[in-house]
Length: 436
Image 1: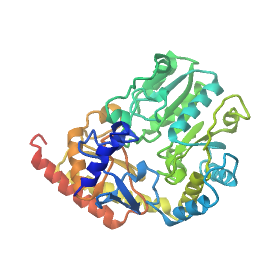
Image 2: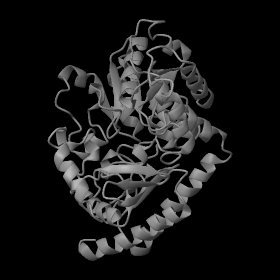
Image 3: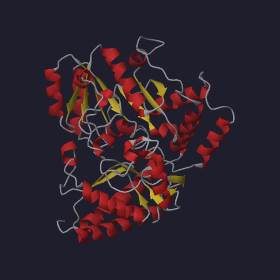
Image 4: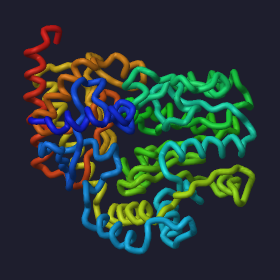
């Protein structure tokens, strides 16, 4: 693997961009080495500027459920751009998108489009506080909801990767309004409700986590959370920016059979373009301006390009018979293959999967169910595995604390290659690390 041009590109980038990247987790700080600069992508593959080809399991961090450069999405973008890229005025396609989202996710009766997942979660939280007339919010250790001040308390994703889950610049007042509980530990939540009775506006969580790796909630935890919120007049917010239309047609809430009060979306609904959305019950959403007193606005919200790409993607996903069954079959084949490799070589690792999201945790634990379990992972071992993956044409997230994504474009050949290369990598790592 030759990455000469990527090295030169990175050296130039750091002169003008903090850390050389526009989102921290893109840097290779936690795995060492030089980030790859991507030239193009198609289907399940990405190609860097040195013409190295990789099977891609990042998928732009989740949106590319159809694979890269799907011809129908590209055509929709082309046709839309011919008529102009943004008007700052209503368009019919925004209503089409809202209507389809409401059809596919029954808990959403009305939805507001924004420009990013961070904007969606920030806005949902403001709305929850405005609706309940309360200030406090509960989040969970290791869950990441974007870089809004209220969420950078014991956060996941890049904050966790870089060891700075509590960011400077977040005021003490903001931090004091954010209460932190333990994922999959209902008692930690009930204790906060008891301590801060009638003060908690919302509980927000990734219903299936992806930002500290993939972890599924226990049935007791997630159903208990719904009951606790109802009993205390607190809104339950599902951050489905990652899981929405990814783990099931109706998102994680369909999979878990839970109805949240508010849901945030992103990634897939933009088909690879910048996008976000939040929605829920009419009575809550109608608190937003211009109907109500809670203000939120955005110049490019619902812009035609993002709506065209997202609507085309959702229509394809919705109209293909057995789409999610096919996706499930592909992801299960991959995860089960890697699991067999772990067992065959007695290699210390756990692979968690929900739908087409998965994470391989490098740990001697037998299960990974919460933030504490995640923090026991061997990040040095992960870094070695990551580099072996690149050398063998497999591109995964450059962090132990992220999800991987399977797309409908991944072929049996792609998946088998990944399984075979994982076996080879495990064997090499066992030979290189006496402690294993």
